[in-house]
Amino acid sequence: MQICDHCFNDEEMQIAVRNESRQVGKCDACGQISHIIEAEFFQDFFEEVLSFFMPDENGIDVTHFIQQDWNMFLDFEVGKNILNYYFNSIHSTTNIFIMMKQ
Image (cartoon, rainbow, N blue to C red; front, side, top):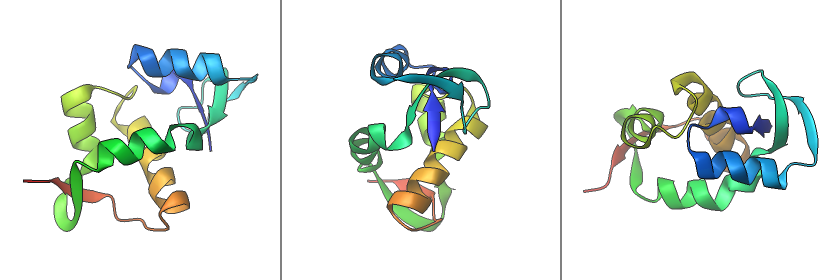
């Protein structure tokens, strides 16, 4: 999945995408034409963030917590697209219903 600097509200993530990008193209997550990189670039970062949560099929979508607390993504749908890709491709699961660790 190709993601772009516009996928993120977080300025450091926007800068990281622009610095790492070697091409301009259409983003798979938000549809904008911009600097794009493979979503796997942020794998270590997302693993660190997700270490604060644990799977629970009765829990709340982790995208909700990340967007509410950190306003990381352009919007909820873009965040959900990126996190769905991350879970489906890297962790081979579609379960992104997670609750915060206690």
